[in-house]
View 1 (cartoon, rainbow, N blue to C red):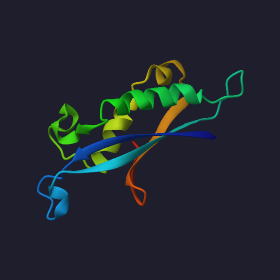
View 2 (tube, one colour):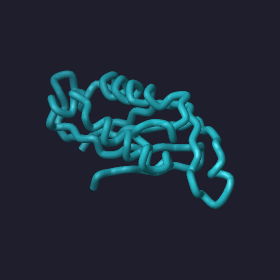
View 3 (cartoon, rainbow, N blue to C red):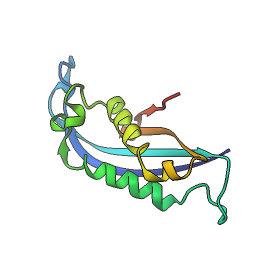
Length: 126
């Protein structure tokens, strides 16, 4: 089994509505997001999938969150934009990438989101 890891960053503000503490106030993070893709077959070049494809889709997706107030985005209209909900959102959007459809030998294993260097969450479908 091969696993590739690709990460990208974005800056955004949010608030955790009804949180019993400071996080109920608007504040920002320098978020880091990592996508992990797995598979067992390599292509004719010896690659599982080109890093460029995965990185490009991840950056494109994170651009929609960058320098935004996450609570105002439709994706978080019915939930707080916590690291948990951001990781689920990114996972499900990332999974729609064309290369996952055209390369059935690869799978999006997980999305990991750090809201700080020491605090992260991992989302998987398994």
